[in-house]
Image 1: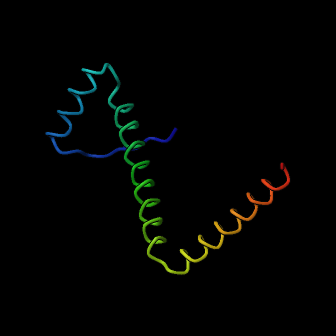
Image 2: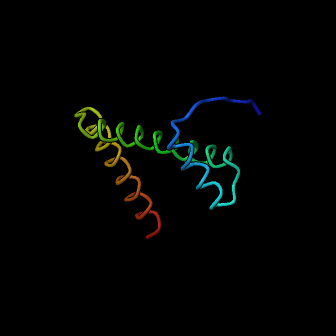
Length: 83
């Protein structure tokens, strides 16, 4: 594991120390968990943004509708095979 050194504002460092003590966690583990959650949320936000952008793209909508039509046809064919 690599070592990382950083400075924090005094009030944030006090809050970190207080929370780490209350949770009975080392400060570095608390920072690690918080950063991991934050980065995961950034990834989710980017994912959501890309889907919203795709939802406004007429070409993407047409491609999705075409795919749904093909899927529906496949379902009908499977349904006919089971009858």
